[in-house]
Image (cartoon, rainbow, N blue to C red):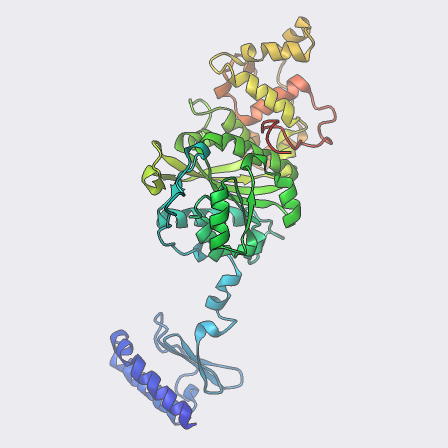
Length: 457
């Protein structure tokens, strides 16, 4: 029609300059002019070059021959259908750009603007350990790492990854503060797919004003009931947060307990650099301790990157780290524990590291006397015992090449070792040797083992 022709002439004029900048070969110029003339004269373009892209890798203009011999033109992002109408390609619901918002990948997270800090009376409270993020690039990196951690831990059916949506993550942000992370998470996930836990009433009010439909619980994060939240959300949670330094360990222990019931699948959290190093520390170094044993047993751990003090307000005096924890879940954790009670394991690990400069024998002497009700002969037999044969579940893991299981066998001189010389799996074996496994295979792992009794329910 005349309207279509005029519309097309307008497109030719608007696109002439970028086309001339892009197209270098005269033969391509001639081909494009021929195609444009064919369009105006209603001559089928496929008579010149069927199903061919005119400019490879540039996507300036291309023709695709359909099965019904109709042609579809693409011109610098515009698409002309068989009816002659032109539309922007992203308006097509089947295009990759249009479907990007319905699926979630780390690459789909865009860089964010510099977070704005509220003025006036909203000042960071030292009593709450508040250090607000103020760098947009750091915020974007944290959110990308969170999406990566969360999506990598989602269940895969038959070993094939499916497209993931925002609701699959069941995201929970701990301590959002002024909302630096929240302001990026809401556009990426949608306010319906994110909830926050915040103790500061000023932050609760601020987030309510900025994101009215966002769920914000006015609650001490140490009192959060993660299993109940997971039940309400319909599955395990993905945790993100810029954690207060002074309660980092207790928050992490609460997440470890929550993994007993599969309430938490992943955590992507900031903490002091020194604490982050302890979580991933290998044996035989000063950083190796209780945090190392617990979280290398319960999760796959990694340091995403170091964070300088300059990206926070106020600036802390130390570097920070972004840590990713991929919790194993109760089934795989039970296989690693091989019948050992987590409560018994905690008792053994705590007793030995309270005297980390002494041998395991000296560290466990008082505990062994308690377990054997003061029977010194049985205590002596315990310390002279040969390591037990590994359970079949551990042996199967060794045969499969599992790195954790490969380091689980106790050495014959284990009583002469210092705590930092023993792997997490070897602490499991010491606990099994001391307490046995009677009934532990069927009993619950426990809702409150590592966190303090006064925290949570």
